[in-house]
Each structure stands twice: as C-alpha cells, then as structure tokens.
Image 1 (cartoon, helix red, strand yellow):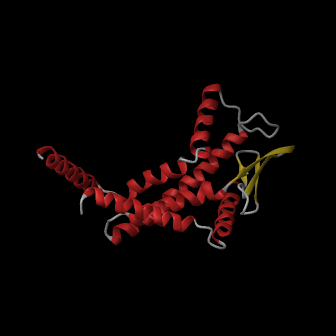
Image 2: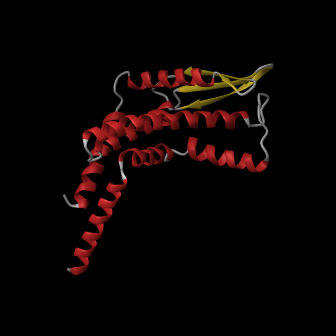
Image 3: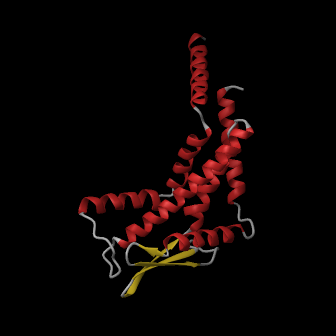
Length: 205
C-alpha cells in the first residue's frame, strides 16, 4: 500500500472510531462522569496540609457537568470550579483509543499499546485535575494554601492554561502517548525508507 493511501486510511479509520466513541450513547457520559468524580474524591478529597475538596455531579446536558468545591480547614468561605468531565477526561481517552485501534500493527502489539496507552492517558487526566487544584489553591482567596513567587506563579498559570483550559491539549497529549506506545524504532525507519523511496521515484520522473 502506498504511503499516502495508508495515511488516508489510518486517518479516516481513526476519525470514524473517535466519532463513534463520542456519540451521545445512553448512559456512557453519566458513567464516565461518576467514575471521574469518584476518582477525584479518592485522590484529592484532602489536598495539601489543609485543603478540603468536594466533587459534585451536575446535569450531563449542560456544558459543565460537574463542580469542584474547594475549601480550607478553619475557613468558612471557599471557591468552586465548574468543569466538563467529557472534555477533560473522556475526549482524550476516546482519542487515544481511536488512534491505537486504527494503527496498522499486529493485534498483539495493538493490545499492549491499548493497555499501556489507557494507563498513561488516565495518568494525564489525573495530572491535569491535580494541576487545576494546585492553581486554584494558589489564587488570592480566603482558602489559599500556597503563595508562589512571581516566576512560579506565571509558570503555573501558563501550564494551567495549556494543560487544563486549552481544548487542543485533549488531542495533543493522546497523540504523543499513541506514538510512544504504538510505534517502534523500526516503524519509524520503515516509514522514512518508504518516504525516501517515494521521493527518489518522484525525482527521477
């Protein structure tokens, strides 16, 4: 199969699988939201030395389907962050699954890539939640826990905007994970060899 045809086939198959996964199947979003919130409670119910975090479910048909309430021991007032668990967790997971399943590699390798990829993409989902909590607890509010220096505050804001707020991050990081778990050095060598041969053929015409 010519490289262009292989790329087009892979792209169309990946997009098709992704679209199927993100369709509003009954109960899927609710189950994922509840699993996301359960994980959040298990890992971040207590944050830092005095932080208290509560995860509350919202309506699936709204843009923000969950709320994270953050407080501090001894302080009555707190802050809240409304989130979309589909964008933050389900979308990158679906993107990783689509890329792995569409990759033309043996099924045993695909299974290994699937398992390793799911582990890594969920670590990414957990990490961006941790980052959002850290950013929120560094804000100048009554429940503030940390007061970073200007340089670190600016760096934290940049990381928060890219890894948590930017929609493209939900696709860039899964794509990076896909390359990491699906492709080997010989795959890159084979691709480069095919590209060189195709370039040489074009140049001699």
